[in-house]
Length: 462
Ligand code: AMP
Image (cartoon, rainbow, N blue to C red):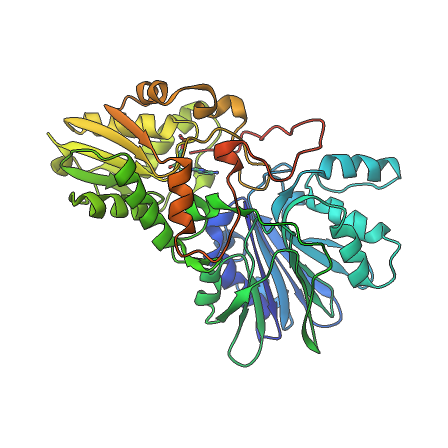
């Protein structure tokens, strides 16, 4: 869970990267960083916290000169949440090298051990640093070939932006797990971004997706595209559509909002309910709830109001405060709900603790009955490719039947979307064939060869 941006050939490049990172803030809230290039050297500014916290002062941009920049928002899925892991990572390689990574490598532990055995000293605990060491140790001559050599050795999910003072290099893993799009700014500059919504914000025009396995190099001669890896099928993360990407993003040829509406419509067909109103869990359940309500012609009501000023950073790991978390974020509208039969729609159910609190909250507000509908299948497996999910032990659906989950959350009824229904909703109108659905089916497209499955760091907080 991270977001990346690249800017090439634009005045105030670092400022554009900063604005773009704002549009990608949902992809990572632990840290943010920007590296700019003035053509001679790289300049880095980074810090922990939200984009506005890290880059909130104008003088930061005085220290980020040049018409080229890359940026990153971080949510750690490998490596701890500390400043040293905040990206872009920069190293003294050639005239300077910086890298920002969205995704997760499945052989980083093995490679790290191999590299350490050969004498490499790691500065961070992030899997991205493995890539840097592989580039540094490659026996290829040109930087591009060294990068390709290194990328050929890593496995898993990677959408990358890299920069030297003279060049921007970007690419996606051969299976295309995570998104990366190319845009153009008026006046000719290039933009790369995790999501098209970042292009919209900085008035760049969407050109195309970077293709799975494609590497692009942008320099003073323009953009050159390479396809150095054998074609390997497709594993576009379906959870980007369900939860992670912004609804206003165009993801792999489809608008996310439309897909979520269709997920809700399918859910209505598969799991109807005879109720007075449909209430979304904001914001993630809104589009699916709307699709659900429209399909069954039931009134859609914003019965839960979200406080948008509570960031994840305020939800501290202590259990006492975590229990507070949902109340800090959501509050019911009792006059709307009292005495009513209600369907609550959320995009996914992971540990079940959020829904349990929501159900309690709604009962306290006086609902007559509450029926939970989830616009995704049961989440039964952790993600190895960059979505922060808890360990299998914490995933309620990995260890319980649906009826037991219903009892745990305290709902009068519970219904999930089927795997086939999810695929049908996403496939409808999609130019992309082949989604990764491992978190729902256990079909992991790239096996994990690390001996020790990393602890998920307990960072998943709701
Ligand atoms: P829970 O079932 O209590 O673990 O929480 C489920 C809620 O967390 C749903 O509202 C989802 O929108 C949200 N959610 C799902 N996946 C993630 C994730 N990887 N990180 C943060 N929130 C998530």
